[in-house]
Image 1 (cartoon, rainbow, N blue to C red):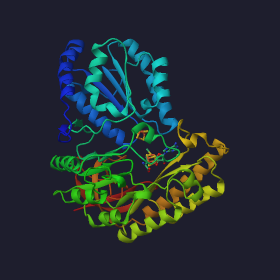
Image 2: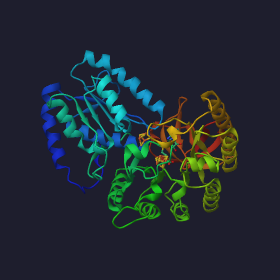
Image 3: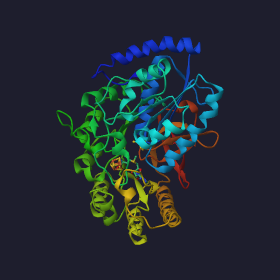
Image 4: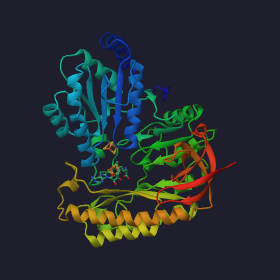
Length: 470
Ligand code: SAM
Ligand code: SF4
Ligand code: F3S
């Protein structure tokens, strides 16, 4: 579904002109509506960028397809956060060589965080000559112009400025879901955690104005969206850079006041900026899901310091205690890195102890991946991959036991669930509690996109089973 995401702050007129020129260009070139295959890797922020690029492509006349084989435009929106993510992209781009040889009219375009790294752009330039267009994270709003230059100019187009010029409001958007939506509230990151590439490829923090966010939230609620996730790498610093500063807690209260039956989520919160004011706002806003994704990364103070996270284990634990005091039903989830350079097994055990003490609903666990250009990539890293793999399994086994126990304690309880789609087994639907736990239950497909009450009857390792209640 195509909607106007936000009201205009910055005019996008010249891009509109390119959009209308492209109608003619594409008509002549493809005779009929051209098809685009847009694939996004990485985080929800990237998915949200992908939805806006799809909005622009729809306005140019593109329809969407699920495979590269029958596409006239292939656009890969890439992620650079770990080496594995990059390897997958290179593999998938390599596979396009033969497809493009068979369909020379096809345009291959790459964008997103990976492209923002000069070594990657250089590799694409030299070793992937069939890639026509490469652009970075700061120019996605210029997609019409870039595509026009690719189709009508001579040679390949590489557009990779270092800095964002500001935030372009008013971009159209084609969302992947008709009832769950991502709403970016800020872009970029100022934190420079020593392992992380994001600040280098996404630039400094920029907040959207309160009005722009509220306008988009209102239009989502009016369009029937039931689950709105506010996005930013560190939403707790939302609004600090605005002309009239606003806190994230205030933003939550304002969105909560929009009339309608919907749920508000947000991610990600950085523990160093997660304030009691925010936790109190969460507790008092009935539409805000009682789910907090609060990455701790490591349970050891020396490792946290080396990571440049700027909080201690005790400060993290104190935050979770306060959060549970004001929201006893709170579901906590987190991110953890295993095998940071120089981490010892004893230090890793502090991570295990923290996981045990907090009792997370679920964890995203990652093996440290060196990212060129970050301080951690230069740190001595003596522990073997095999050894780190063992620690990793120890952590995931522990979390599995904790999640199973937590799930068992939910049997007999009743939850308001947003039905998201069919379950894994035939005849079952799958939905999500406000704590972000998946629950499957028998029901009609017509309920997808609405809230229902479900009583938990059985706890499996990762999901719950239940029965709908009237
Ligand atoms: N801004 C969020 C925060 O600070 O919590 C995280 C964003 S990052 C895209 C998601 C997760 O990827 C991080 O929380 C971290 O656990 C993981 N990550 C980032 N860089 C990594 C690296 N070099 N190796 C392994 N995991 C990494
Ligand atoms: Fe990366 Fe740290 Fe920024 Fe999160 S807060 S995006 S981990 S630098
Ligand atoms: Fe990846 Fe960029 Fe997100 S590096 S995790 S897509 S901000």
